[in-house]
Length: 482
Ligand code: FUL
Image (cartoon, rainbow, N blue to C red):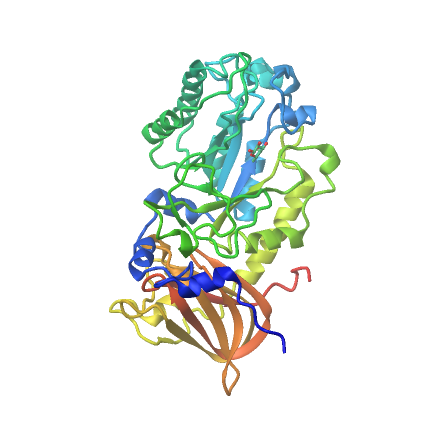
């Protein structure tokens, strides 16, 4: 018989007095993490769920993804620009905010900035009198969308880039955008950085940039290099299977680990922060429009998968739709967005659990089980204080068939659930339907169709008393590709 060999590391672990597994975290640390909460601005942003990125600029006309800053402003000449067509498409697709690349890395400004000549002012478009930022901001207001700006810190055109004078230039442009175009809901900063004409790498004044945003648009959230919204870590539009909004405070941009927010990081952290994920992805291979990609618009199945793995995983989806050389969203992209909306609407129109009798293992005063099926985001169910394991059961009244579930935590109070399961009563016993880890703002689950008249949501582990805002059961649209 082979002898069992215990590796040295394990011996040491077994021998060490009080040795703990990495995720055996003291309760008070978990409770502390569970009580970190979002700002009102972060909540407003999270509720947007589905948002639109608009990459547009000289690259649209040169065919590049990154311009080198040497482009003539004369190349910018959309023949039929209509920002209302963008806004109308977004609205119909269920997107709630539009973020425009006011300036990309090439430095060309889509508005007539007072601080540079490298802008629409010297383009043939609208005889140099046009302002894309204004047209987009006004279209968004007209269609009830929020508006945001991408202002690339990396600027390959500006002569002062690489020196401190550039920080002044950047702040001036930021102030222009944040004071002359009405409310701005999101400011988008990636960390791209290069060398200026002087051969020096630019040292960005992030603190100074943040101060300008806070002063001019206190309701805006700052993405990426700012403190409010974090890059999910990929450009595929996909959040992690366990996506935490509470993280140890670290340097901006250093937020790409696969197990970010895992409890094993909490004990050592000095500060914990609410830093939720945004998933950016383009509907096409490129961020900018390229005619040769007209037949490469992502499939309906692919976009649905992205939706379930972003919006359905405690994140906001920022889907890029690049206007073409006319200055319009291309017909293929518009058609795909329509299909996506139709399928999502059909799937989520009827919540089979809504208003059905609900009961729970326990309920704290004022937080009854029925709150999870009342469709009211102001109410939630919570078991008795200090209970990390609890269940809520919903009686559907008659057998119903479903293959999708939606669960929301009352996340403005903190993100708490670490593990949960969905079960269905088959007449004899409870059968597992699905199991997952985090919930946060929204969790969407997909599973093979189940027919049952009773279901229960079991919270298996939670960092503190769980709070469940809403629960839903749905049957996927038959138009969803198999
Ligand atoms: C990146 C940029 O370099 C890409 O061009 C694009 O704008 C993407 C959304 O962000 O950092």
